Image (cartoon, rainbow, N blue to C red; front, side, top):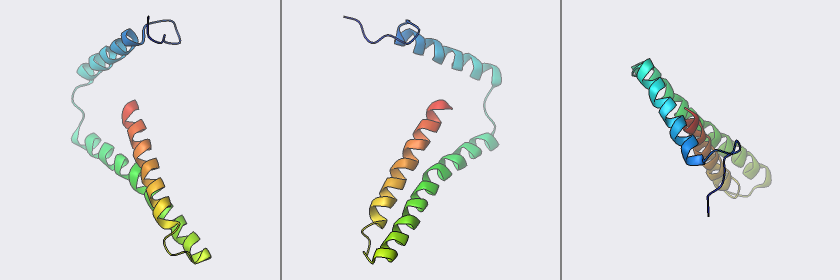
Length: 96
């Protein structure tokens, strides 16, 4: 029994090995990224996590003030924003 096929009919393992090999060759040609580029990546990752978390918190606080519900909306929306931010950071790192 074989595993799932890639859309073009190739074996997914072979496709992934080729993709990683291409990335490795490209990295060797371009050299090591600069310190500024690394710091930029760290900054982008930070904002990808912080912005959705803060947005969830602000929307939750607004809903709680509107309905007088204590922290009923703030806590879940903060966690939802955190999960969304971590997921988007994970996806961003996967493509980089």
